[in-house]
Length: 68
View 1 (cartoon, rainbow, N blue to C red):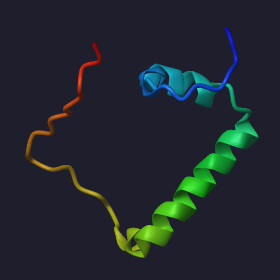
View 2 (view 1 turned 90 degrees about the horizontal axis):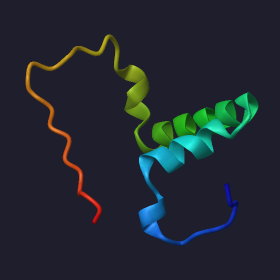
View 3 (view 1 turned 180 degrees about the vertical axis):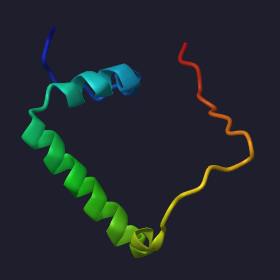
């Protein structure tokens, strides 16, 4: 595996991101989780008020652009 910096968006696949995340130590992963949580709460503090999330009765469709 070649470790280098790339600025190509085509290399930002979910698989590549997963490999990068898995390369982190447990402490680094937990630190990122805390940073994400702090960020989301700073953007939307009401997230703490949401209790007992309920499933929706509608369908969810995930749309992704296919890379050529």
